[in-house]
Image (tube, rainbow over all chains, first blue to last red; front, side, top):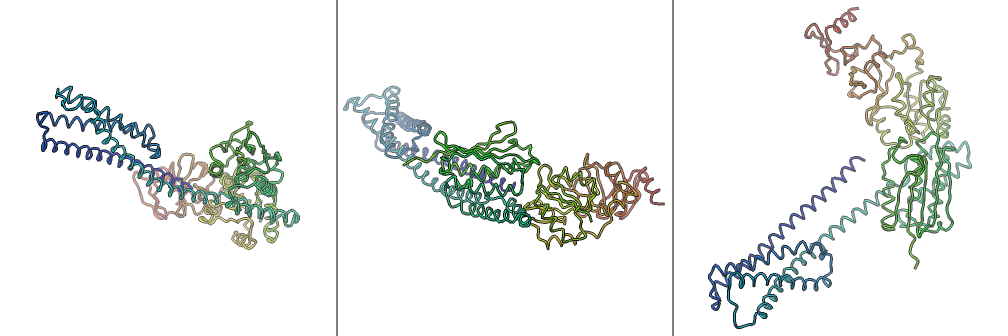
Length: 377
Length: 240
């Protein structure tokens, strides 16, 4: 038991370690792409202006180089500032159809800011004269369009990478999910009828054969019903509450053979609740828990009450037993049975289904399952 | 041999009583539903043998056995499905029966019991003292032992506990060394110093030690120092 808990936590930390490692690798890749991409453009522009110098402006080499540094540097800084915004706006989750118009607008806005900086540097700071052939507006528009292409390209590359990364990751997640489903199935199998109960029942049955043959025959049938149900229930997603209640009654009759007057029962089930679907073994788990923690540890025994109502668009099942929530009874709780039951409930009925345990009166523990009703078609 | 059945289920006790009817040498003298009743029955009926359920409301069978003052009667555990308990018993040759009880397995368990041992009354000449053949129940974690007093080589004080050395094991017993000393027969057990009691029958060698003390080596390797005063007493005792 302890071993498996440690193994599980080790697995989790391994996955977390993986995730952290992936994040670091992604950050390295980002820096690399930025440096190589903008660096390549800078090299291209620099060599271009050296090989084909613009005869009209007559700039010094230093001036030309400073202009290129500003153009490329501004682009680098703007895109770097854009990255956290894209994450904050959650654009990575968008489809390409929703994404494309946003990318056009963003690249235009970024390009406008970029043109403002570069034009400001060239004509404001360096006091380079405006070319006379074209109007100022046309030149500015040309700059913006040029920038648009560059930033749009940058954004497309960025989101293409993330699309592939997501595909890749969802594949991994699918495998992980498959494994955890298998584990859950295995756990569900294990959490079926408690072997201690089976062997104790068989022992009582042996004694009953002499003492009360009629009751012994009945008990054999009840035990058979319970075992068959627990073996078959794994294949079904839900069963009518009525079916489960029938098996729980068999189970309680067997527990009463063992515990005799120590186990008292109260059943209060609304007739309209009987048809509603519940996950198999849910009520059984709650009742088995009630016997384990409420009856077995107390020499004087106690009462178990099962109440089921159809209230507020949901089936409410309450199972109460004497006792306190954390121990005091001497039987330490592993919580595995209830945890599994809650998990199954959530998987089948979604987040609206709940399973809670609380103390009600000073010494009464109530487990309550709330199961939303199926939608009528 | 007088037997006491301890199980919280009436039907389980009935079934065992019925099965035991096949063994005339075993006479069921009483039944108890829980540890509290069992303690009362034990005091009034003085059984030689307990059939003890592991899982009971309140105290478990193991806790109950641990709380008993030695010497403890022979014990056969009964359990329905208790992996940990069964493992503990298998390892240490405590007898146990799985419910529903197989009559052949019960016969084997009965056969393993020592012959009609005269009830503890025989030991009344030295009231309260443990005989070499008496058994003490010791538990540590998931392991349980039923150890004959004569097999104990060394007892060491560890606060309120006493570490008991026998065979390859050295579990702790929840009793102080002083409490144990009162129950041990001085013919066999000697208080070597404040922390240790040794079984004289297990001494392998003795050598003189500093300031007129003695160093006693026990079979199994443990070495125990006797202070000058204790060494003096030891010499006197041994020279008799």
